[in-house]
Amino acid sequence: MLRTRKKRLAARDARAVTMLAEVERSVAGLENEDLLDLADIFRGERRGALGEMAAREMARRGISL
Image (cartoon, rainbow, N blue to C red; front, side, top):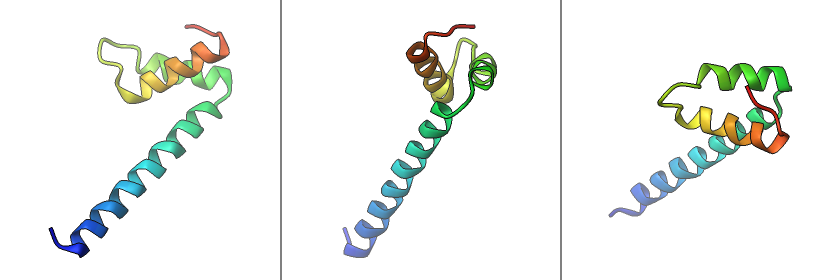
């Protein structure tokens, strides 16, 4: 694999990790009512990543829907 491609992929991966950390911080920074709204939106059979983050944060805070 070319060095430039490796660097490009590494930079892309680093941006993805940074973005995920920012999303997690944003979910953690929500007020309880907003967090409950987010969890309610993603409360289906297929919750997805945001729903999982919201559920973990709700468990940490000791709140539920």
